[in-house]
Image 1 (cartoon, protein in one colour):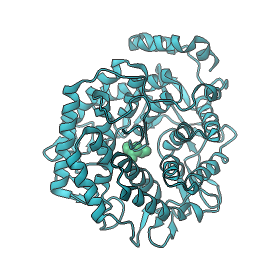
Image 2 (tube, protein in one colour):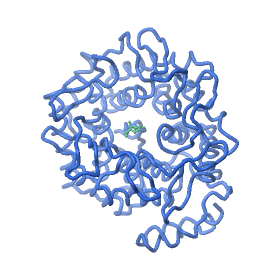
Image 3 (cartoon, helix red, strand yellow):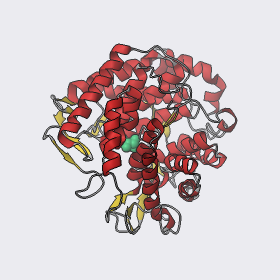
Image 4 (cartoon, protein in one colour):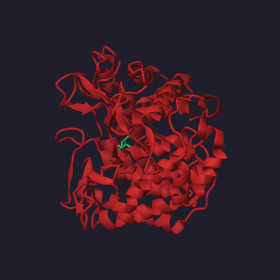
Amino acid sequence: MEELEEKGDDGLIDQLRLPLDRRSMMRRTTALGTGAGLFSGISTGASKRSRSAGKRPADPAIANDVRREFLRAWKEYKEHAFGHDRLKPLSETYDEFFLEDESLGLTIIESLDTMYLMGLDEELSIAVEWIEENLTFDYDQEIQVFEATIRLVGGLIAGYKATENETLLDLAQDLADRLLPAFEKSPTGMPYRFVNLRTGEVSSGFFDNPENFMAEIGTHIVEWGELSELVGDDKYYNAAKNALQAAYERRSNLDLLGATINVETGEWTDTLARIGPPVDSFYEYLWDGWALFGDSDLLEWYSVLLDGIFDHQAEWYNDYLWFKRVDMNTGELGDRQQSELSQFFAGLLVESGQPDLGGAYHDSWTQVHEKFGLPPGQINYSDLSAVWPSWYLRPEYLGPALLLYDETGDEVYRDRAYRHYQQMKTHSQVENGYTVIEDVTTRPMERGDLTMGYWFSENMKYFYLLFAEPDRLDRDNYYLTTEGNVVRGLQ
Ligand code: DMJ
């Protein structure tokens, strides 16, 4: 990485402002992964980074359109699916995401802080009233621990911060207490994938053995750390940190993580290292845990693992920055496939002090958006072909656009986000809101029948924050979870 560092940040940022073709030529000569430790020096420079470089000009016309579209979809949800987890907008029905035949009000919980930011106070009261009257976690059924943390615990905490309604915090704590056995019963501290909400019995879902994915093991510390602070009990933070540490300690000699591990024996069962799922937010929460709680262990683990990634996975391929999938022990190439969820990594690089590289990776994915309109679920970046053609209303291109815009003020990121917004309206907008795309390669794009919960908590929040200046958010000091829940900065 020496070569990059010697050029200095300003040089790189200037490069990024050049038209893409000129930038590409320069990149060809830029070294990656020379072992110099791109991330090992960040401890002194990057403590608790603010996510915003200050006020940016709002664009009320676009912001109002986003708010209107959010409200339209929310009202359709209320009409056809209210109280259920998710709207199926084409069939005007619903499904339950977590439990069999029981709802945990997923869309309602995912919408709370977005409604607060948009000033939709009447709708917010209706949502909170539903929670107060109906939400319970006392079911004799198992729940997926990771999804429950990021969507429900996080959504309730953000809702509590928005409304100061104590019931929301009590429910978040009640749920976390029911999830805790997944960590406590594991001999390694890495959680089991599922836990029975009433009995605390654990299981591993479709796995024959007690296996779990890296992301599902390591994406808890933000929500659980916030909860620890709010209720004054560090057991939640400690459980989340132990899980991260147990996985970190099993990294390979190349400082890489695999994807799947046996949580009882600590043996790796999938050794293909990748920045995307099912690992992705493991890295995000190491950084976020440090940024939010100032725990320097997390920073050290983040730095070591990110250096491993830059040494063994990062490459300029056809002049664009990509991250190949390699064996965690040998570094041998697995393939050049990339999940579209990997786009989040651009934002993580921005947050952890590498906006130049974050911007470069966003550029890489922008080619994919330009080629297909909306990104396929999985691509092969050697020829930008679609490996899996679905787009499930995912927000991973937008989150980094917001971070890059806040960090650099460069309008190119709002332009990209606005183009994405138009594509979403063209292909996903239906009479009853927005729906997933099964195949982005057909025209018209083939649609599925579902509005994801995170569309309410992530996509529409990111669009809104890119174009609005809500006075309910401290734009210089806010923090979003991996699910887009605002855990710091609501006012
Ligand atoms: C969200 O549930 C979260 O962002 C998670 O970390 C992975 N991505 C989905 C949305 O695509």
